[in-house]
Length: 222
Image (tube, rainbow, N blue to C red; front, side, top):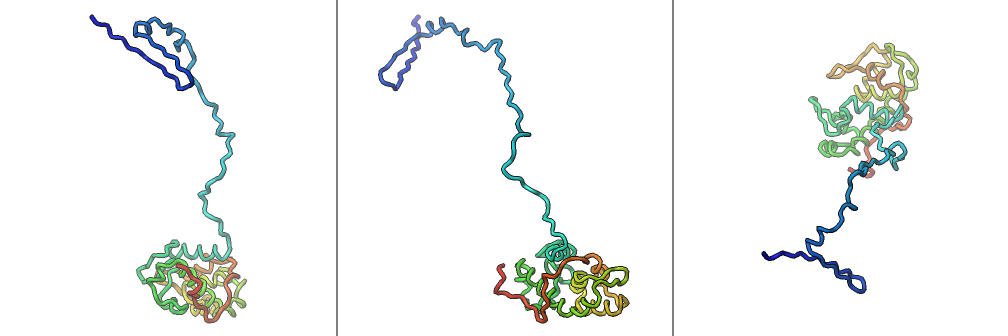
């Protein structure tokens, strides 16, 4: 019977060449015991260093603390109005993050309600302009009543501006000058007193008093 011989060649690329040739019969004679892993400890562990590793950065999932600033004031009011949703329209037709009526929007120079809903920047500008206008209308009442207590609630400037956003400055004037006797509530039953209490104590000095406050479209980017 013809024997089959397997030959293996190693030809290094370095200068010179060495040729090895052996048959399967010769390979069987190799002492492979020197390469056995018997009785060797092959279990390795890597030391846990996670307590010693300092990350390059940290991701925070907490909301920013806005406190009693103007931004805190408007965001708290927006959350009450719409949960901060720029696109929402309620069943009475009030629009956007701050739930503006079309009549109020016209007072600050906005006539395109579709464009208004699609522009967060325009909505923020409208809120400021309306607050500025209300502050001008109510400036005497702010001076007279801030620090006083009406229906168990201390009157503050931010409470007055929040109530004016809810009910309009005219209704707030009547409420203050009647010492709470002429009350107001919207279609959902929310009262001026509620807004006076809930949004009192914010620093709204950022809002400037302006008689004919209008949105400056040249400064708005959609």
